[in-house]
Length: 273
Image (cartoon, rainbow, N blue to C red):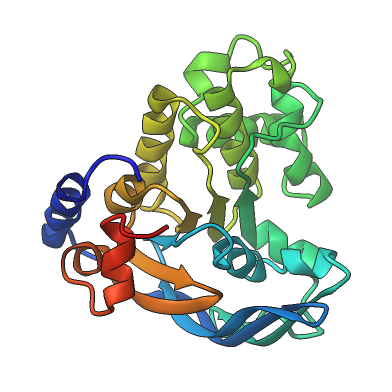
């Protein structure tokens, strides 16, 4: 457990004065996830707001990342995985047979725990998605998409003079922002982040957190994090998971200062985890 409870509860309290967006982007209803015969997620229902950051917290192995992957059907790629229940995005069931998972993932971007730039140039990392989805009609338009994505990710000024250099040559924090820019480039509506700062140093982590706070004005963001301080700093909603179940979900300020369930209180104060 990093820091102490006073630090992050004070951060959470400061959010009380903010205007909290409440328009729902993603509705999850009675979600169960199985890996073969083993059940990993049990009957989870929650609404995720648009233009806000929702944090998933809880001990390792509690189902946070498994549930996150349901939102863009990444579990479809695991042969033994089976998901039941319904997830609606803008009112449409993303698990409907008429929904193309590839197109869904262009609407629901994913940023992973470890930065994973393609073994290509910085430019081609960003241009890859717009090219395959036909989002740019020519070189000039593609250039504009690349610049726009890098600017939104706070990386343009650092790389504008070396766009043809390998993306893998950037620092860890820059690589993660490159991956965020790559996700942004296909104009997603939702950005999922699975512990995006766990492999980064404190300075790079602070930059990513600033970026998340900027991006939430445009996107629905869901972040899995083990850092209580990070959840308090960047999120407006927090969901606490334990043993594959959703224990508690609500405004971050309330979850950290006045949780309803004793298990939530025990976790955020470090009594278990």
